[in-house]
Length: 539
Image 1: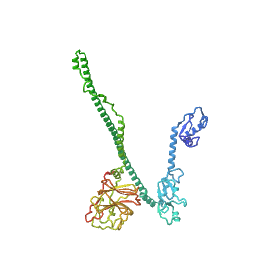
Image 2 (image 1 turned 90 degrees about the horizontal axis):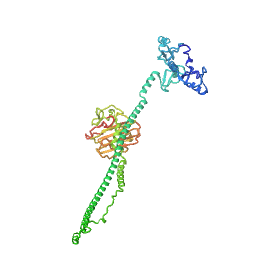
Image 3 (image 1 turned 120 degrees about the horizontal axis):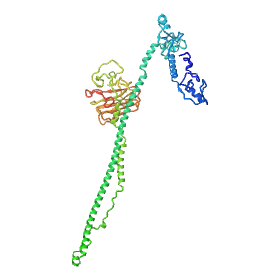
Image 4 (image 1 turned 30 degrees about the horizontal axis):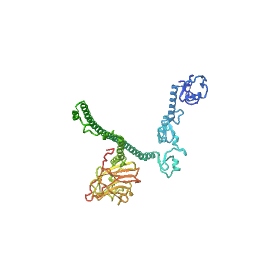
């Protein structure tokens, strides 16, 4: 391509004097930005070429110059690449840099990098891949490299800043500060926030599945109700029709019986009349008088007292509607009665979707407690084992905590209490007191229910609240809603709510808490067992 063809002007619009944007060609062969030439022609009463002044009496249809458009796009890409490329600081002609020196704050091509590879004084300078904006690595105040990090003020400083302004501050090398920052980011709050949001996604998905299930159930129930209503209407119509038909049948039978009697008497009268006419022709008076029948014949019915009215069916439809209204009213009354919270069994099924896998923490268990290998069972023994002192372990109360902590979302787990005479089940704050005598109550960060003396159930409020249960639970379900501050206990078999702690106001992470209590010389030796939750999503 010629020098003129590759010059800067070849890619510039003569109207806006900038690089072409949507280049189009006029019939005379000149090129302009489409917005520029369109605006120029819109402002003028004549359409003419701004370069050669050729007039177009009919406004031409502008067509994109595809070749020029491609060349302009390529030129912009090349310019962007050149802008991103780091050049050697010391070359008079543009040459790409191979390395940048973090001390000299300069970039070097292969030739100018040689002293940093051979001169002893320069070989200690740290080199990096080519870096743009080396000025950002310079202290604006002292014009020295930023080579230290002030942990106190959380910013990079130069050696003069460290000497003059940061003497008593926590100073680190950039490498050490970088490693610390990376380590802290790996355990940062953002990870916890990510986990919280993942749990929230799971919770929303669970709720969505429950919503779909409830919608399906309600739709099925609506279909059944509609079917019942149609069936009730049909039954009412059929019954009323049968009543009307039966009345009509009896009415017809009565009419047929009367007509039959009347026709029989008509026959007798006609027969008698024929006999009289026959005798009337006789000329023998004696014969006539001896054989003349009685008129009217004996045994005829007095029909003047007999009446037959049309069947009356008026009001049948009204009575049918009234009966239908009564039937539907009873049905609607049954349907509109407030139901228990989504049906106790359905409610427990919903809560079981929040089931979590719970294991016991041996480091917290009282020395007389024995845990199973799978950390799912705990029982009390008479043998007190020796353990090194630990602030995590209960030393007076026969308690053990779960390993899993929770501070957000909803949690559900079940504990088998079958066969025990005493036990405690619930949740506690991580900061719960573990040394000395402990009073189990919500006031002290423990939300639990308990059994004493085989039949005395209580909620560990302050003071304790006696509970009256219809039957002794074999498994206890524990549900915690951290956001709502709610802890609820259920009979996992009957689905009945045992007790709820509302408005708990949790101030710390929560953990499951179990106590099998003293074994009472073997009378209470059955273990507490964390059981698999039946019907949860993971089961």
